[in-house]
Image (cartoon, rainbow, N blue to C red; front, side, top):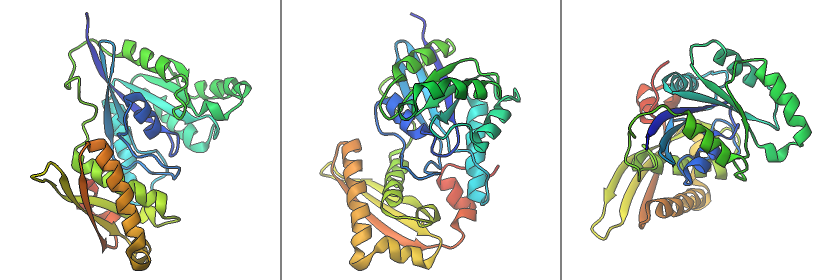
Length: 297
């Protein structure tokens, strides 16, 4: 039988549900997903098999108006993902509707430099069916989408149809990864992301977005377990105190939750050690951006 393989870039505004959809398509947790905007900072590829097709789904950072050097690098990574892909999916939060951010993204997609594009309405479980048709009509006037599909990444509704359509849309060619691989994300990067996910879930306001996590070491132990040492960089002194918490309670809770997730995904015992360091202006540093897999726009 003919094999197919291609890249699919997930584009959208923050909180459109791109990471949730990637995890649903892959059938595994590959990207962190929280209710907070701008959760995704790095491009993550999920390797999905559907019949004879290998679909390489690239989760990209949400596209928004950037202010910091980090923001600019994130937005550039998203558009670079679209340019490099065989197909771009504009994922739209059906509940939020046609926002200014969505208008801007669709308008840029219509420029023609990004190749093929499909429209995917997400979170359809949260919207009355009668509201979906007008929203689709308004969106399709903004860009020449080849197809329009509707899904709920949270419940799985419509995802099987999306997978079937993507499999047929991939170009003919050999698979680029072993069929039992599910992502190109290294374990070191996954560890840092899962720690950051817990920071997002367990802290509030500006603290989560003022932090970054880097895995300093990832060492296999003789008993089959793994020791992971990670550093959390914070932009302000007050953030460090919040992350550590009274008597170290907050950092222990963050570490315990991240360790449990890692142990489940890596299928082995995990020893996780976290260190918090103040580093004002980390989001303007080239080294910190490269640690996130980001480059200057």
